Image (cartoon, rainbow, N blue to C red; front, side, top):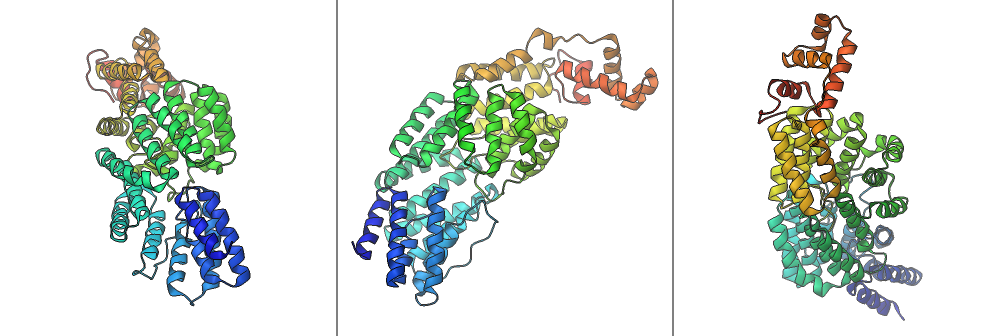
Length: 505
């Protein structure tokens, strides 16, 4: 088989969705081209595959593009421009954040598209979602103008990711319908990703069984070992964490997978261990991991959802030091939604994570605002699971002795039971138990609670009661723990009107 026939064979494999096989054939083609001094064919092989999902394949294509660019020099401006754009488009997003270079060849559609891919790859941070929408529209227009289906499909995919991050789920729903016809014509990988996008919608809405069936179908449609195989476990984990079903089995699978991922991915294992009730093991792993979880590159698509997942671990393990850093990292993304891609699981409004962290840090006013915003965002996103989580957090913040706290807890309980969120329902039952509604304070604790309600500081209380300031501090901490409150302000509200107060902090 000569070089031209090999190149056509590689194109046929790529169109059929056999991306890894096509990339291997491109490497063989590059070997033949190198031996024959055929630089043009080497360059054509380097740009045949457009930003593969598999990191190993992407690295293979990137290496081909680097070699082709060095061999081309200035002899063929059109191919040089294409290869240079491909080099940027296939750059590893976990490496240093480097903006793509400007690419010439605006009259060449392939150069234009590869340049768009490179630009989108440099704008994966959630804050750039609006910019990615504009680039996506250019790809769609280019695809329609050139009758190149793949250009339009990539544009639709970029739009779906941006709509999800922005929380514009009505637009996402419509985009999925438009992408469906394209996916059917582009091969199994595209069909698989579209099925996962629909599974993500079901998971967001708390339709766990439906999401599982779609994820199974996506794995069956996609190639073995492909993106759908890995994401299938991610979907399984999210469903297991929220329902409690098969969590031990899924945790074992997560442990096996993270060994092959970047070090920060061990945060996923920490979250799985916490969900499985193995807090001591999670704490041991977190001790080694915590210094690194705040170093996730912000320009990677996984950045936001990883930070939100780590926030949950901080809350479970009461790690206020890392919580403070994560709060500062997440605050600029308030108003957005945590989701790496539209075809991945939904992490909820960023405001929900911010509210959890603020509550852990004792910032009652900020926590209340974040959690109120999160509840509204979850309701707009048609996400009952995240609405239930926001209400449960508000219940903890306000306390079971306040009417508002009990109302949020009751509503969260109703959602959790309807959706099969067994762990959350169990936690709410504990918060609403008679022992928590009417905890027995000692006479000294009641005395100190009354003085806190007057607005006195620990130092003033210590002087008045002839106690050490440290003793008063310990009493206040025990009181807050008994009452399931998170601040002195909340304690003051409870003391003044524990049963009929409709607002708390």
